[in-house]
Image 1 (cartoon, rainbow, N blue to C red):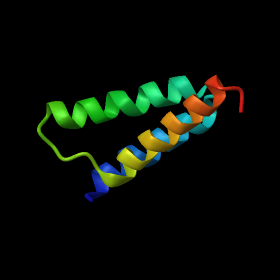
Image 2 (cartoon, one colour):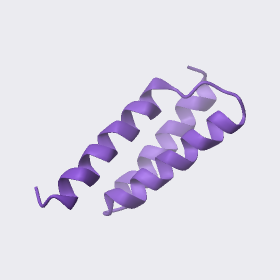
Image 3 (tube, one colour):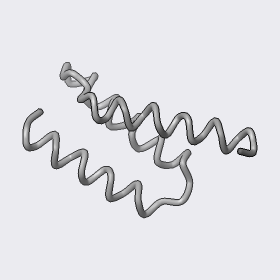
Image 4 (cartoon, rainbow, N blue to C red):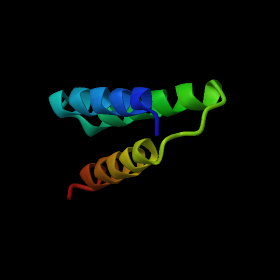
Length: 65
């Protein structure tokens, strides 16, 4: 993974730490993934992992866990 991608993911992590709503965090990550795909770039595994974790958090919260 390039330094630019690592920097972008670190910046995204910082934004996520500030937000309390996992749905907003998930939306940020999905938007970043969309940007990678739209530009024809491979989605970094760290970003895909973040998406899965946030999706799990959203589902658990919606079920009252």
